[in-house]
Length: 65
Image (cartoon, helix red, strand yellow):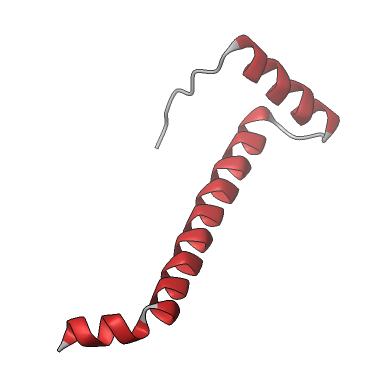
């Protein structure tokens, strides 16, 4: 799916510089950054949910009855 990503001049310059320094396209860098961001958010959410379940197991069991 195609999309347009609008960046500020500063964001575009930073992305361009990073891509150039690492021998990658701006698109590749942006796509990698999005994948990493989403993956990190999912891992954080899963860790928080696991912590809630572990810390509040007794209360959750009472609610389930």
